[in-house]
Image 1 (cartoon, rainbow, N blue to C red):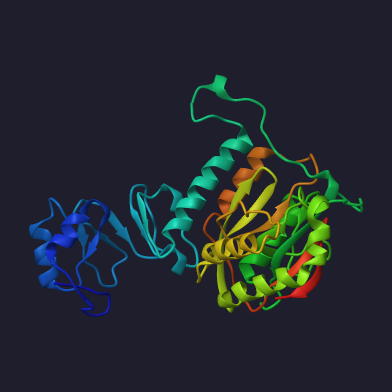
Image 2 (image 1 turned 90 degrees about the horizontal axis):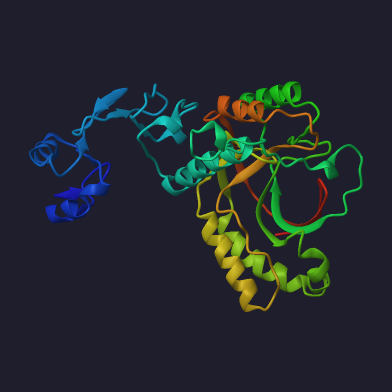
Length: 335
């Protein structure tokens, strides 16, 4: 008995499958494998398919080909390969190369929707109170923003916006005209991705002098660790509403979190102050709330209509270490 996708690769004993049975859906690649699995269908869940839109698993689930119509309780297969995948959050499970990210995004989406609407998990109307949003008036108009931080970030300057992203911007401009919309070419708020914050807003005043005096040490560590990430491909698909606006969900082709942890460990060992990055996701903010004229339910519903559209595929060729001043990134050094 062998494991493998396009051919037999790793020989195993059947006991290996039985030991992991509660966590597996076994894909039978030929009729002999299917015969074996069906003889043990009480313990091993399985399926077999070729180019079918839908097939039935041995435990009665609907195994759904990428991009095909999903029903509640079905299994979504590789949704990252589809141009659009509706009802993704209503399925029973997701078969994907991004299991951890999907789980994180699912939890993040549910938690933030509750926070925005300020509703507990109870269905009782008495548990509801005033909706909760974070309106950042410091970025409204031409106000001078005194906040500073030192991030490692990148602009998306190596791609042409997809039609879906252009349409998203168009809809944002119509429905959230008073808010700050992040665009590929500015002019004020540039669409960007932050891999980590070296110094957070709350640390800048205390530690900026150390950063300035030991900038070469920071650069050496970050350059050494970051180079293994490049080139980095990120597929952005779908939106999540957060109390401060809307973010795009990203799916990278490399272990970004692993590099984040390596950078933090190296900075700690060098005795350099840094801010442990709180996010374990790949997200880009596309809308920031800066005006109180916003309806929480509208924010949630808008994000939901774009929940699994592919918004762009980005190829990142470099990062920069810079100072964030309000909404304007000032590049200090390329990594």
